[in-house]
Length: 286
Length: 311
Image 1: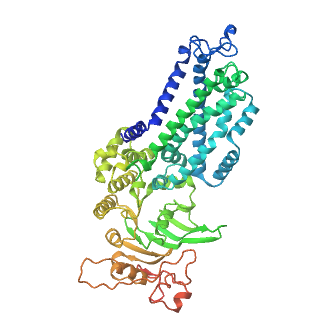
Image 2: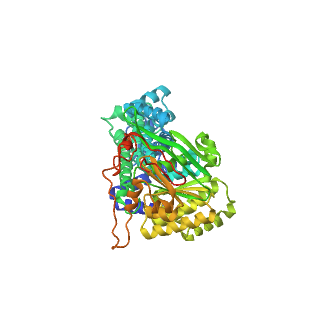
Image 3: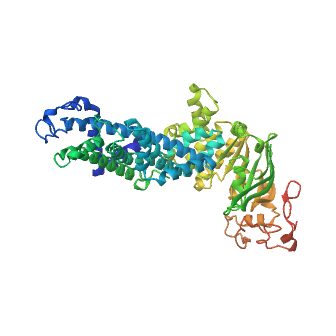
């Protein structure tokens, strides 16, 4: 009842935020495209057509063809599936890892907290993308390894934020009451603390979807992610690079798609952050 | 039934933990079965810490809390957890005492499930019964804590506690955050519940009026130590310790013709990091003599005990 009302009020606020609505529409369309991908591509995305190589966008090929004569539009459509799917998997991994580590560190404190947070500090000291490069490089280039690499480094900021929230929530009387009641630590952490630290994480995750799509594209561009012939936006950028001057559409379209997806997630994330901010709402937190 | 002896809690502070805040510095008292003891003192005297120590929500520096022949501080964490259902605590802020993401009904069901007190089929009946005991309406079960008032939340807290049939309850300023008329309702419920279930209580408050109504005996605390303990009517009519007298003189009287002699204490409570030598109260006591600065008085007497050299 209250939860539904809360969600309704968030939706209401998002509706008034034009950027967030635009972002949501873009994300939704991308998702529909990704789901329907195999059915709506005009051509087979990996089928070669060596007679029509590097054709400019025309009526047959709306986005032209690449150096092997593959239809760029079909590849973009299938790429949506790869990029969004991977980003979702990474965000899920990152959230689970971040929640587990952050809650453990914040709730138990002491030595455990020290160890986890020092690990976080070390990982934060390097730029994300460089660490991901190293890990993906060691594991070898493949989509799975890129997801592992990103998951392994991206959880740190989540762990930090969650730890902070846990520290404040665990001092609340209801947690002490649960301890006095005889609940076990694990039970308290999961049942009482976790639900109360989730909302900042959801905002962060939405905002991060964009960054992760970008990082996957970047790693793929560098040759560590999706391997040809898998149609992935970053890989397509890389494949189009040698023909930048003669056939710029090979880079423009995947580039535009990446930009569109990242922007859309950022818009929604920003809107969600504003909507969830208790100071923007009345009477939710006493 | 409950015996507290030599209870101490020092919180370490300072860069290397060399300094200690002596929040509780040697407290002894016992509470008989079915009795309710009041613990009064001004803010920061350590009364809340005593409450939390007894439930072992805070680990003590020293001392014993014996409940039914078991020293709580010797138990392992696991054994302690098994004993916890016997004693419960009501906190000052009712709105923060319930998980904001749980419905009132779920909050009350939680201890029932935890201790498997009733079967699943009987769960709803039991919740309704508890809700009725504390004077809430059945419709409140599906509400969230922020949709209820402070008084209603405090009722829900009491219902939740009653769910596991405790024998001992600590009420830590249970009414301080509430309006006066709601305070009265909550106090009534607490009293009814206490009589009905024969509970033993420790009632922590700075509100002497509340203490007067709710308790059989009172312990007065100053700067981490007890200064006086005795029957409630004895303390209120015949206080011995100068600090108790000062506290009592601060109770407002509802009669404009009565001239009150208020004892105004000089200064603030000393820093518990560096408590004064001798009697801790001597820095603010108007009767203070030489011996008070040197020797610490012990809590002596028969029944009505006082820690003062001048008695």
